[in-house]
Length: 456
Image 1 (cartoon, one colour):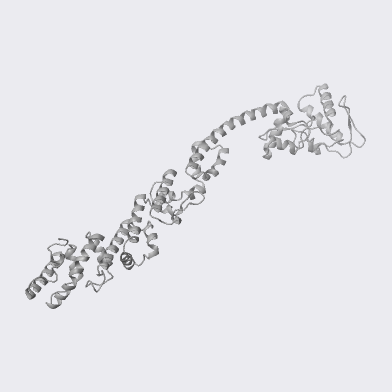
Image 2: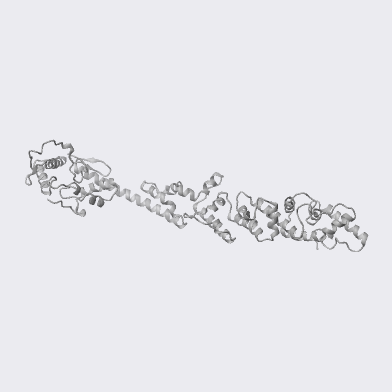
């Protein structure tokens, strides 16, 4: 008789429970397992275990059960009777479809070991007599009623776990939505597996921060901790990145300085977060160290490179964006370069021998900056010095007086510590010239003839 498969949706509860358990052990759905085994017939055999002429037909199966019940057998004993009938038929015996009685053939008893036979029926999965039922968690039963009760308990527990899973799933989704809002939803893929492991929702964020993907995305936080700073939240971190990016765009920096990778990370900005550089300081660095130099006259850039050889034209931007360079040092160097640049514009120099000193002028430019000289005051002051310096040098030679150098003039004009001494030296020269030639002196045309620098 041909194998007749029962439709999946018409299976009895006991058979369905066994199929679900076996499917779960293989990681597939019950429907997939059912089709994989070729279905189940009325007698409870899987299609892939049914062999026509050797496996009990539906009629023979019913007859064996009726015969067992007539003898007063119950539970596992009925299963044993079915196994016995199956083994007998495989040896060539016949089953009486009216009484279920077994009629052995001459060859049916030769060389047979009952332990070597498997019924292949749903619920046995490779067991021999007596019938064994295996629950989803691996627990085995020979009593079908006990098995059914236990299977029902497992289903109840599974339903409860499913509810908890959904609760964890909802919490996970909230976290994912929050990260998606910041453009970093891809980061929490690693955490989804933790839901199935029973992770409480309150621990999602903690476990997320342990993943390599997260730590790489927010790696500046670990650097902050190592430096004794507090770690900042993801929202703060991304907000800082956005502010840095907007400032860099505003100052026309190339996109390479703030471009994002696939996870929204802007690697070049980590150094600012790690060293606690605020957006205000970043803008100051760009305004002071980059914009001031780039937008200034060429003499300022020339002075900067002359005074500080480690800063080349192409490295100015990298220099001011290096957190290792303090903003105070950047300000100091740029101001010194501006002073030197204004001296050059006036035809003067901060270097020897024009100033009567040794060196390239950086020390003296920084010295003037410490006394409050700025680019604007340097432009005015060096213009004044240039108008009378050459005549002062000539008078020093004519009257054999101490050299009237640029450094002497700077002391008076910029009100440096030797301002009074410089003033006396300049006055003596003008007096000697007046006494010799009468009228005005060549040093009276500018501020050098005034009592104080900057008077007009």
